Length: 333
Image (cartoon, rainbow, N blue to C red; front, side, top):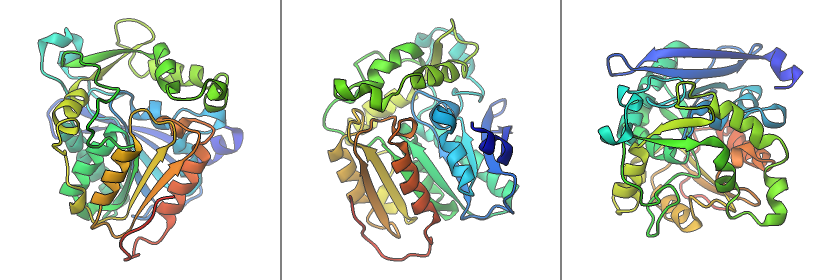
């Protein structure tokens, strides 16, 4: 974080109760010191994806600023939750045993309950009736379930590279046996990050030192893992992919969501294809208004690449636009 941001921003971490005894959820919070009382228009909840926690996806200050930093500097009260089994939230006891000893942990429906607990806490903390939800990848499944079930609390919904129905295999599912949790070697993720990027564009997508900074912070999110450089992630997201997104069995009904919706994807995303986004966009037919943005020269990890400023601008502009807009439809560009 640069000196200006460091002096202006408050960084706070909370542990709150979930709806399950002995399970606590970590909330990260970022806001400006000089802003007034937060409102429904200015309060955000971020929801992470299938493998990496909120800190890893939203709060790594590459080139001096993280996604959370930028949103806070724009005047938002920014919160990010870790579902159980991720980051600083309670790790189920099964994650200390062999992954073959239990069913996959933290499916999207369970994570949606954790998101509900986090939203309930923030609404009470800020004394507001609604907030906006920004979710990435599998987090889009979680946020979609939440928005369908608790639409009255959702001001706006932003989905960055959200998983959706696919008639072809998805990268996350390599055919491995379903297990309670997965083990990820962080250093090996560079290859997956750059998959699909032309070789002569690798440095422009992932500049020198950016991956190493991300990897160090990401590895530190699981200090109890078996060895340094390894993190654990619950296996439920993989079961969601296999039993829902690859089986034409949606986890939520986009048509039931009436809040304004923004979908965002980058050109070289190997996890969420254009045809998946097109199908999903068409199903948000009852959103107050909807928009689909394609960003060139980026990957599934667009929020931590040089092209992220395009994503940031689109997200901030969408969030700052009046929620009272009533037009339906919308466009892709």
